[in-house]
Image 1: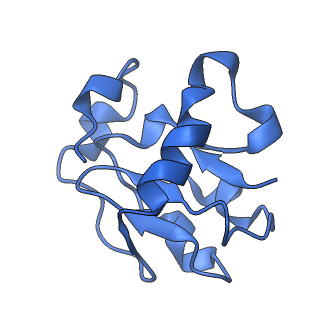
Image 2: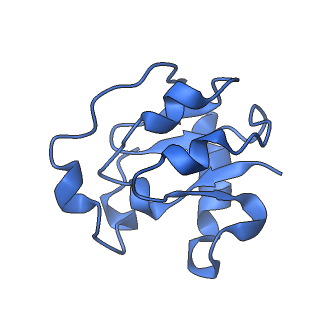
Amino acid sequence: MAYVVTESCIRCKYTDCVDVCPVDCFREGPNFLVIDPEECIDCTLCVAECPVEAIYAEDDVPTDQQHFIALNAELSMQWKPIVERKEALADAEEWAKVKSKLGELLR
């Protein structure tokens, strides 16, 4: 079982989670992060670090966010690893509470 980044991360891209990951399983897109399920070791460290509560254990992903399990797997094969914390997107605070952001995802 791997951890999964869900919709709350879109257009925020806080990278606090990246700093604590012992295996560098995060991948970076233009406005979203994903977790490579092949690299994730289920350590749970990233969950507490996410300020928008976007990271779930695969078995705990909310029903309306289940499609993010496949999306993380797909995009993790396309995007490059991110191994150091970066500043969040400039308007991250504004987007942090917005729901239904899948249409905002840039690939």
